[in-house]
Length: 106
Figure 1 (cartoon, rainbow, N blue to C red):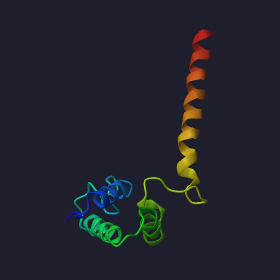
Figure 2: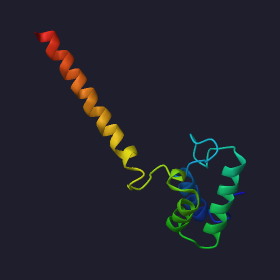
Figure 3: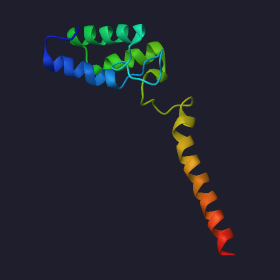
Figure 4: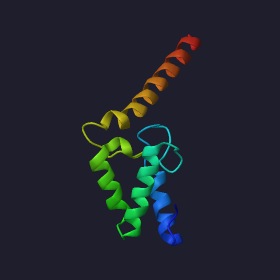
C-alpha cells in the first residue's frame, strides 16, 4: 500500500532503496518479495506517514537489525574490513600486474 502523499511516498521509497532485505540479502526491501521486506516497507511507510524523518527511521532500523540492514554501513571496528578489503585487493592486483610486466621485460 502506497502513501497518499506523493512526497512522503517518494521519501519512503528513497529510504527503502538504501535498506537491505535481511532474508534475501542481495536486494533492497523495495525490490524484495520476502515477507520480512514487506513488513519493513510497511513500517517505513507508517513512520513516514506519522512525520518521522528518514534518517531517524534508518537509525532505528540499524539499532534494531544491525549495520547489515544498510547498504552503506558506518565505519566502525566491525565494518572496517568491508571498507579496507577493496583497497587492499586493488593494491595486490597492481603489485601482481607490475610484477608480471617486469618479468616480461627481462
